[in-house]
Image 1 (cartoon, helix red, strand yellow):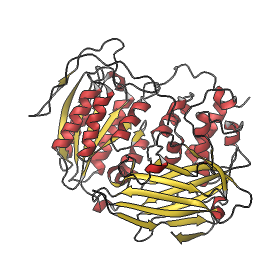
Image 2: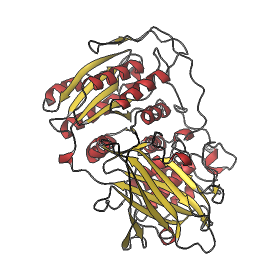
Image 3: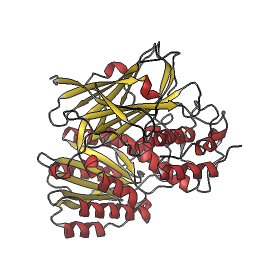
Image 4: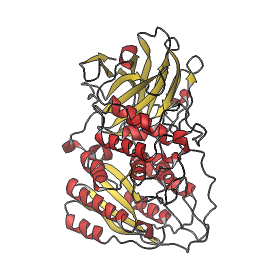
Length: 527
């Protein structure tokens, strides 16, 4: 049955200048690798009575399931980063080109709040290596940072901010920021939550990775409410239920289970995920939130089924109201970014990379309500440019979140999920027509309410006055997207370099981002 549609206009903040007064107006990666050969072995046992243990077969040479994407490079350092300094260097074939507005005026994409690409890339740079180009997703670099977006006005569910400034790498274009924000949720009013952790305890998790997982779980014991629950499933050479979902009113029981986490063996990811979802289904939270949290370096080297069977398990979980959250740990050359993102895209969740306690605190302390509570399902954005005022445009990033323009109002198309208090930022590079004035186009949002299924839509204008006047936080977004474009070898930078990025003004830019840019520029100087 078709859901009822409600329409409305967003509250748009059009910024009058950097740090100035504000007024309001109502209104993917490179080519995928070939599929792996199916792994050998027996069948997965169907457990109806209880969730027990799956015994994995011995790994076969060359038999890998759930592998995908680039897992890293040489530990002795990367090859010369030709794509940073040489126009003939390697580039990703999926980087969106410019579109002539007279031929294509619509840009449509699913919202994305993942940040794994930034934290993973940050760790590579801090270790003196370039991140694999196909793990660099500009939207995740931009969305890692928090911006001073307005809260939605009374009666509204979203706020929309549009601003911009001339592009630093092309004198003929502007970079336009489209910032979207949902309302904050009072922690006292959020529903109860059950988090079923599926923890990789294989040998590759030894050391800092498993320590990070334990620290993360410890943070949740301190942060969650007594009526929330934590369950723990582990997998190494086999999968097993370590702790049935237990209320936080029993913290000592949960801490004892956390202390039992020890590494060793192969990586039987299929078993862990199957047990995790079965556990979550058996302990659904009435009128609450149910998450399966996969904590892993994303590498799987034994198993019995291919990726499609695991994705089917995750899809069944979505139908039951279970969301998948991927927390990537470990890393250097072993983290499988492609797999973790693929799983969460299927599981209506988000993908994060955690390599230090501050990352875990950001996810499960500072932004706990955003992490737990979804307020918009199948959320899509459609930007329509006016050919009279915009001659050409490109969306920077969201390459693997593209939605057909005709499917913007097709509510059967899967899109993105957004949590309470989340921000979603998109950066466009546009070329304005001579004499452009008034409205350059519109931004439209469409989403479904998680409980009722009711679909809503809102539209806001893109004013030419805003596009030339960057507001607070814009410089951080610009430099974050510039760094990502350089790291993935974008063909649209006209010889712009890391050195040129490092020379950009640092006023108002996130200091951690500036430090990372300066480190990269020093490590890979221009010729």
